[in-house]
Amino acid sequence: MYKVDEIRHTNMVFVDTVKGASIQTGAEKPMLKLMMENIHFYGESEADDCPPKHPCSCKDKNAFMLASSNLAGKAFHIDAASQLPSYKIKSYGAWNIKTEFINMTFENFSN
Image (tube, rainbow, N blue to C red; front, side):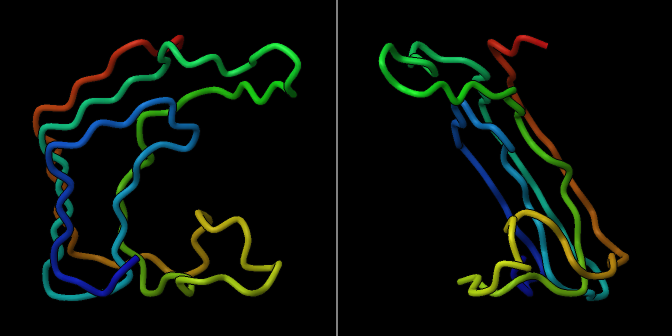
């Protein structure tokens, strides 16, 4: 959640993500823009989530969480247990955000 006017994710590939990709700003300004373009999400890959003789950590896979803008984010290096997990938002939402999702592909998701 950086205090910037625009965030772009372009030409990216996400594989085996549990929480998924997320674009967030930590500001309230006259107009904010969040964009994802040419993104490819793979829910499952050839990698074995539960290899023999290792603890299984199989979890549902998600492509992405909704984009948002909030008045503040968390510190880059979280140093207190109450700040965890890092993906939880702890501030009020902001207005005037425009989102664009262009050419997004989803493959190999079980749900």
